[in-house]
Length: 152
Image (tube, rainbow, N blue to C red; front, top):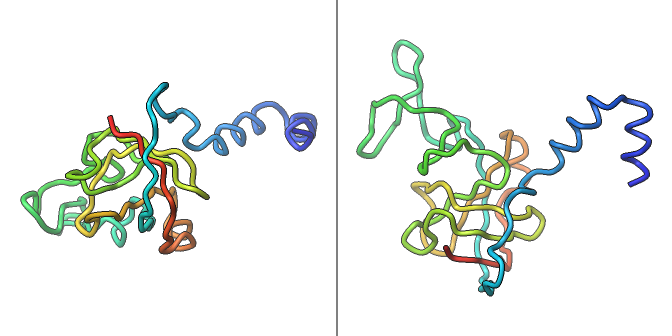
C-alpha cells in the first residue's frame, strides 16, 4: 500500500488510477456465492489476440479473416471471443462440452477468469488464459495447475 501512496504523490492521480486499473486485471470476476468449487488439475496454456495465437490471416485487401472451420474466409473481429465478449485479462478458452460459457475458474499465478472462448486446440482438461500481448503469453508457456472451477 505504501507504494501506491508514493505513486499518488509522485506521479499524480491520473497515472496512479491508470496503473491501479491495469493491475486490477480480472478483479470483477468472482465465484458465485454459496456454490462449492471443484478442484481439478488442468493443462493451462496462454494466448493473445494475434494471428499466431488465434489462427486468423489477412485477406488480399488486408482485412482479418478466419483461416479454417465453417467461417473460413469470412471476416474476423480481432479480439472478440466466441461468446461475443471482448477478450481481456480474465478471458479463458476451454472445451465447451466440459466447461460451458460463464464457467468461473481460479488459476493459480493468473487469477480469476471466465470461460468466454473456445479454441481449435483446446480439448478436454486443457484451458487457455488470455494475455494482452504475445510476449506475456509466451512467458506463461505451458503449466499444469490445480484449478478451482465453478460451473454456471
